[in-house]
Image 1 (cartoon, one colour):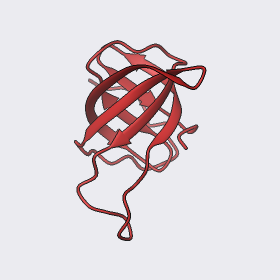
Image 2 (tube, one colour):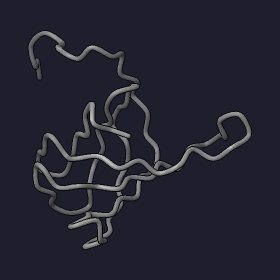
Image 3 (cartoon, helix red, strand yellow):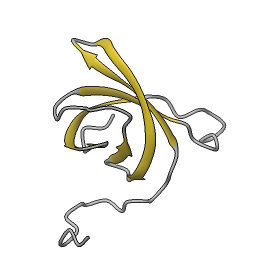
Image 4 (cartoon, one colour):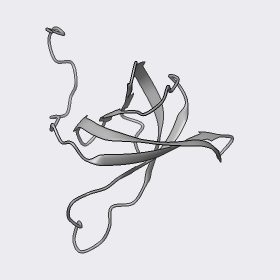
Length: 96
């Protein structure tokens, strides 16, 4: 399927890693889920989900990296879901 010209500013890397996420409401956990990364970059993450998510939901995401970064584990990131499709989520430039 052709999606037109690439508009993203960062190079995206196709990686399939385990993801766990928590849906937050008022900074409190509402629901947990799991999936796999589809692709990621320095400013975004696309991943499959095991349940429906809504655009604008706040998510805390943890990726099961196969190696450590400088000997330390890469921590969780919190972001707002900016694009949702059936079975997948995209977290964009607000990933922190």
